[in-house]
Image (cartoon, rainbow, N blue to C red):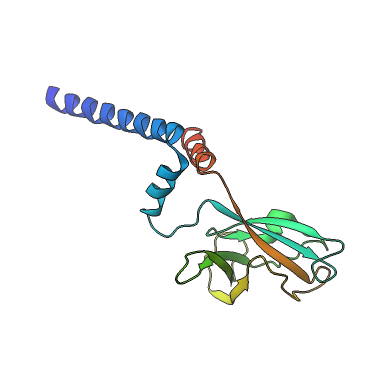
Length: 171
């Protein structure tokens, strides 16, 4: 009995020390070291959002901007409400970054639509755009703002992890 309590205490202490070391590394390391660490985890573009600016003219005049997640399912109606200004339909959406084969630079977005309407992308995929170019005027999409540009917004890596740690401990 005494050995099992000692084992639990050692495991708990090791876990706490591990968390403290990780938090310290995140808060004190250069962004380059942290970015390299994340690249080793796989091709996840978790630190980006998509800034979509849609306009009545060909990318000018009466423009509206919408910021949505990348690599995370979302529902445009849930995010921006039901209004004439909202360009999103009822279906869930998942945007993925397409990178150049040789350069690795983000060049386009693959947009998938799902039959679910709750931000989970849990039902069948119903449609998709294979490649929507970034940083170019594209369209037409549909009224009232048929033309637009899509830009990636890179978030600071530190704020991303601070957000994760904040939410991990608020439950």
